[in-house]
Image 1 (cartoon, one colour):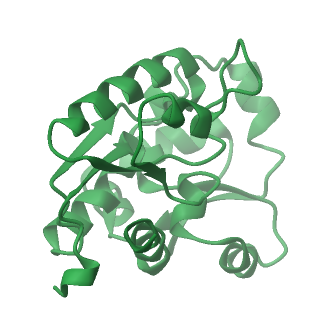
Image 2: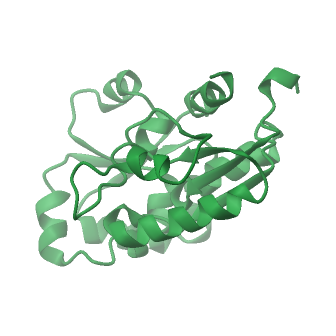
Length: 209
């Protein structure tokens, strides 16, 4: 790996929903960060717990590196008591040398708006990543049937953006997990293969700054 693309000197703090993609980048040698830490998946539904876990993992990351890259989207956190205190304000409060990838959420990290528009092909889509399928009971633990009925069936389909073959693995090993999620959403689930090119570029932007 060329020195200018090395993540040495950086630690990464990521939402656990992206674990499969992040670990794939580690295992293939692209992401050679000093330390990679995760929060629990899907905490955007539990904002106070998200803040608690994110701050704790930022403190842990400081033990390994002065510079930290955060894999959370701009829409993943908003203080329920202060609408001006968003994810970036929270990161600023936790010291210098913390940067966040420029994306709205984990879906946007894996596939940009233009690519999603092509995949959508005129349909109304509820977007997912393999992590959402893996941890859906955790992510939607506070949802009742009414919320699910209001949210999902207005779409034509749910599409999983699969960059690592994780969805195929879930299909093979625990197909009942996908069927149960699909039944709960009252929506068909299909997968679409994407590359990790966009995700890599978003990460590289943080070390080129």
